[in-house]
Image (cartoon, rainbow, N blue to C red; front, side, top):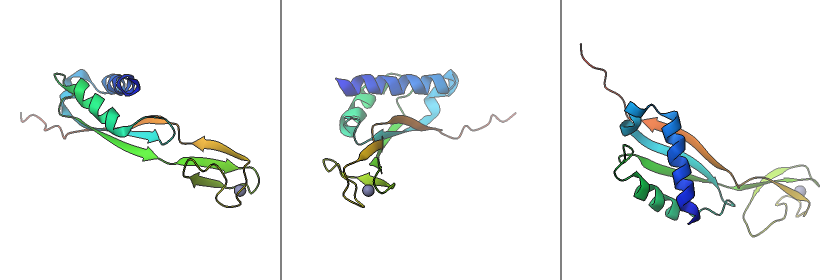
Length: 120
Ligand SMILES: [Zn+2]
């Protein structure tokens, strides 16, 4: 399954960016997924939840933010968001467009619970 390897990838990105002793205080992981990346958010959530069980990330939550498909039109020189399967420029209806966004997968933010400082 495609989403399973992506969930594992996100998982290892979190592990690389958060100190081991703080992993259990990861509250949520925010990811950006382009609409054209062929990733099903529900399926990715399901895989992430399945992987996190029995790990120090079991209390964390995956938050998926789907980003639109953005194109650059070489006729009217504008950047616009489009709604697939329509692949024409929304401003001038031109077909000379180049995709500049919509297939990305980015781990945007890893949020930790507030760590209560030890009272000395
Ligand atoms: Zn245009």
